[in-house]
Length: 285
Ligand SMILES: Nc1nc2c(ncn2[C@@H]2O[C@H](COP(=O)(O)OP(=O)(O)OP(=O)(O)O)[C@@H](O)[C@H]2O)c(=O)[nH]1
Ligand SMILES: [Mg+2]
Image (cartoon, rainbow, N blue to C red; front, side):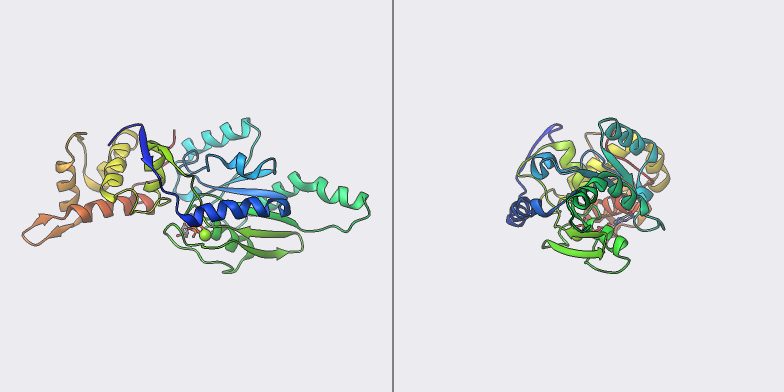
């Protein structure tokens, strides 16, 4: 694996289409909710989001708070806030109260209706565009806000296929969009981080490569978690065999003849990470 550069040209037609459509819808939009995975608060930002949404006000909504390493993620939040961004960190599965979204939106957009009133116009609802890379929780956020299953969600990338408007109440309209990436992901760390947390399909980055990346990252950043779950205490960067054997035997990834099934081990590592069985982690530091 080349450490720094990749040449992943993963840009299916539907992502190009979504980008085009977002550009066309922009004039209808008051604010952008940029959804980011709190475990990769840097890698899961759309690299050219500012070109895409121009000067529209923006709130960064970090999801999956329950699965992230809060110490690291909070540093990212401070970093973004220092740059002037509005940032909200949420656990969309367990948080009871997500009113912060409405409060911050109100704060950012209050002049909109004041201006309308001064022009003799009626107040109108705010229109928010939800965007982000695949699988970060855009549709889950919408369902949370609407308090019903307004749109489909799923633990794989590419669940949302089309742009759609969802009316929340007389204060807010939301537009759900399919996850997008950019034409060429050059930074290999970003690519592997996205793949590790399911924003890039397995067809694009092979699961065994992603699993080895995860093992290595975990060993140097969260070694205790690897020891607890798999009994790993040593690491050979040039040969993953020993660790695959160890994990396979410990977690029962065995095929006939008492051999370890390496494919199963890879799948297990990736699944364990995504489900939080390797602890609360943040892969951007
Ligand atoms: N633990 C946890 N899981 C979450 C959270 N938010 C979303 N998820 C899960 O993440 C997965 C992806 O959620 P979606 O809402 O479908 O993601 P999306 O961004 O709409 O994905 P695409 O439409 O594929 O781009 C689902 O399995 C959700 O249950 C969260 O805060 N915590
Ligand atoms: Mg979706």
